[in-house]
Length: 137
Image (cartoon, rainbow, N blue to C red; front, side, top):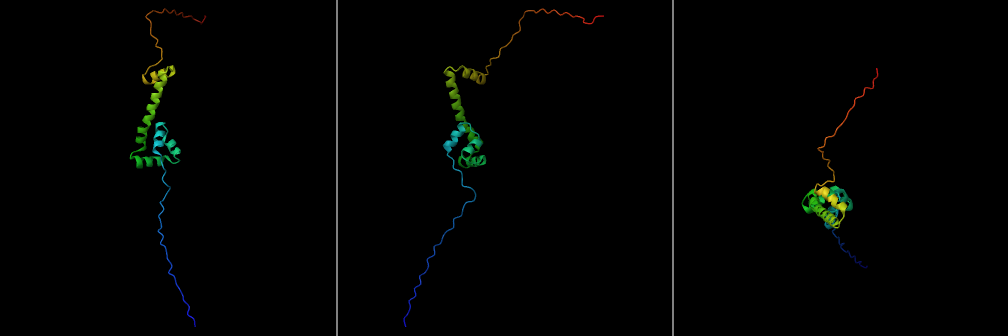
C-alpha cells in the first residue's frame, strides 16, 4: 500500500484596513494670490465664488479657515489696493492733459462744479401793468 502525502499550506490572509471616507465634497482649493487679485479688481463675492467654481458660502468659510477673519474684512483690506491703482491711473490720465478726467476729478474729489451763478443787479426794473376790462356793458 502506498501512502499519500497530503500537504496543506496555510493560507496567508492579508488584513486590509478600511479607510474611512470623509463625508461631503472635497474642499475647494483656492489660489490666494489669484483671490487677492480678484478683490483688487473689485469683484463681488459671488463673482469670486463663480471664478473658483463654488458657492459664496464656501468662500466665506475658506477665508475664515485660512485667513482667520471674515470675508468682508479680508475683502476690504485687499480691495483697497485696487482702488489705489485706479486713483493712480486717473491722476496719470489727468496729468497727461485729459480735460474730461481733470473736470471729473475736480467735481468728485474737490467739490468743484460748473454751475453758473446768477447774481442780482442793483438796477431798477420798471414794469407797467395795465388792467383792461374785457366785459363791456
